[in-house]
Length: 529
RNA sequence: GGCAGGAUAGCUCAGUGGUAGAGUAGAGGACUCAUAAGCCUUUGGUCGCGGGUUCAAAUCCCGCUCCUGCUACCA
Image (cartoon, rainbow, N blue to C red):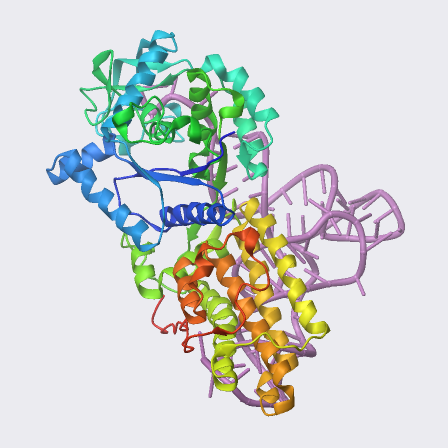
């Protein structure tokens, strides 16, 4: 097991603009990566784009540009979005990268030499329009290939195959016996079910150049390029430095592998990530312990607002553009919503009103306001300087006791990637501080000179909880936490590790900045929708 | 067809045998340091439908309905 927390996401296909699903996966992975850094772990976070393939080739042809040009334009969109959403990755995988190509070719050569890859001819039904072979699944109820396929002809074609079937028994054992290959475990049965009834067929991994030019060439047969499996999936190791030359400027593979986690969507779990990928690694000689776990997340479903003919028909009617969302509501609101209102592994319905509601209630009202009232009273009643205060009673002790309680819940949840639960724990903690304020009514205490110690103590407690929250929420809403730290005039909190999160992280005699709302409430116009 | 997951308060969801929960929305209240925020009280549920097991079922068993997804050579 390596010391580095290596986490990857699926690489996105550069044939269309990024949507909310892409954004969710990257933000989720980023939150996990930032949490691990908060724990003091060294992290390597890899994400990127899948740029080869037929659809890209076709789209480029349609626009009359070279696929490389086409792909660069779309890649830029993804990079820009990750920038906007504060997705802080360490490695960037582009499958047109020469280093990736070399790695793929090395692997192909080795497996070919080991007899894991062979060539054979296949004859079947081929759709000329779609430029693909058709399977029985493509047949309609009448058992025919429908008009959507255009002209269907019988065609024979030679291709290279990977001996998938040879490893079927191993794979089944592996999945059955591993506890954490699939997270959450409820999806494990889905994989096992698939494995049960399959295993006789090998995997076609090439396309003749006559059909597909935009891919990585087979090193031992220039008439063929690799199909997606032995291209996109390889990114997880190629960009981690697998078999890389010294001048490649890639990480040291041995330090990274195995990856802790491949973060993927449920749509690509079977067959790609739960069948092909482990089998490929196994064939390459990796041991069972060197096969990474899959964190399989659900989807944000887009529902149409009912009650009439919404502008649904237009192809964009349903699309929620993450760029627009971030520009409109801010990065914090979007990041917060994407991991707050879904249980990792499950689906959720995307709803802008809930995005606004969660931002307003939990961040603005609860946390933002706690910070604001604490600092405002500190300024008005104490001249802007937090003082320890000699006062102590049961409620003070009870509030302080909530920190370790919250930490426990937070880490337990985050360690099992349940970000939503972790956030709930933090929010409860903040609420406790607000209740605490009502109990002591510092605005009343300020009127009585004899209550000065108590006033100082109470305000100090409130500010402390705010400070703790900035540490705990930093993985989720980093920019907001930066603003909070600025308000508290406590930039040192940015470097604080989880283990150092104690009650007294704000020094005695600490001066705070002028209070100003960190989370301005979002007002949603009626017309939005 | 098979398999998996889901169906709980207006909304989003927790809850796996013992008097139905949270957040939010709605209603009322006391307060005022604060981003009309915060705090207190409170109205909402035949827990998809029908059977069964049990002293006791949202929770276990059987059947059904609806939703979602998957069903490894997209050669």
